Amino acid sequence: MYFKKKIGRFNFFNKTLLIPDMSKMLSHLCAACLRGFGIDAKTLETCNPRALELGKEYTSGKECYPCQITMGDILYFLKKEKERLKDDFNVEKYLYLMPETAGPCRFGMYNKYQHIVFSSFPEFAKLKIASLSAEDSYSFDGMIDKKKVTAIRKASFIALVAADILDRLLMRIRPYENKAGAAERFILKAQNILSEAFEKYSASGNFNFIFKKLEQIAANGKRLLNSSISPKPLVGIVGEIYLRSHAFSNQNLIKNLEEQGAEVVNASIAEWVNFTSYKELKNAEQEVRLNLTSFKIKPIVDSMKNVLKYGKIFFYQQYKQKRIYDRAVKFLNIAQDHNVKDLEKIIKERKLFTLDIGTEACLSIPGALSYAEHGFNGVVNVYPFTCMPSAITSAIVKPIMSKIRMPYLDVSYDSTYQPSRETAIKTFMYQVKRHFKKHGRGSF
Ligand code: SF4
Image: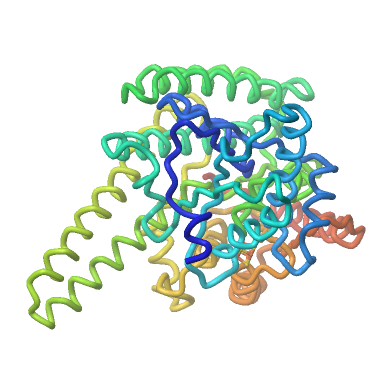
């Protein structure tokens, strides 16, 4: 009850919505998309050493690393804002977005913990936290005008897929760029072009202009490739979503692997969103089966409505995602995304795990095996120090990788810099190159 007053489904309008930076592309495109609907959305600055210091100062060290980082980013922003606005600063003008899950890991506790910290500052105590939940597949119900809920949901999903594609374009171009730094400059420009497009067109529901821009970006990206550079060994990344998407937290792991000779494919963000929708659909189907055995009409009808609701969401996402990827792939072959149903099949057939347990282990375990089946030369599982789902992934995947002689690396991060971690990455890359020499590489 106490938390419900400060954390929940608060209306976005007439507030500045503060979005934590997880994946740069995702945060910026989603903020632009929301601005298109008239919401004053802003991405929080990240990668700032002073913000990290604040994050460490206001956590005990036992929390997950993403909790420390996001804690620091929001406190840093609020303090700066207070300095800038002086007496005009009013924390009630802001809403801080921090989603959650119901478990079984600690993500559901971030917003509660962060609220307790805000309460310890008189000037920030009234900050409310808007919380989307994986339990209803991140619905905006109750946060915006009811009539716009579906439209925002669809537009944000498209922004999310576009962000994934920009990330994949960067990973596809950078190892083969014709001029050092060209890929990063190009993608930053592309991010701004798409942000403008989302801000202008997302509310109209007419995405054709945005898709055309995406096609142009893929076509222009192809021109940056140096055709004289031979294909490089392929490394696939799985793991905890924040760590694998946030370059500052993972100490630039992807760039580091590329500098040591790899081409990298990172698991996407859409994969997680599709998984939560698919899981809600499966839960609703299960409820129908249970209610049928009790012959009670109302619960049967209600659960059937949920099957339709989540079925529609899941199939829309699958369909749309495929169409958007196809438009980019026409111009430059980037890795297609994993299909959640294919991933489920992998763990089911081998009796490795079950989606009923939940967490990212459901995706990372089959994701790693899927990379191996598609001829990748190595797999990295990246996660925050002490992350529970990633430890499960490691316990299941590591022995399999060792059996099939696939180079595999577990790499965990906190805010420390460790020479042993760097050595492990170098050793892994040595194995990847040997694997590549012996087996060549598959395609994505
Ligand atoms: S997934 Fe890992 S890092 Fe994220 S909240 Fe759960 S335990 Fe913490």
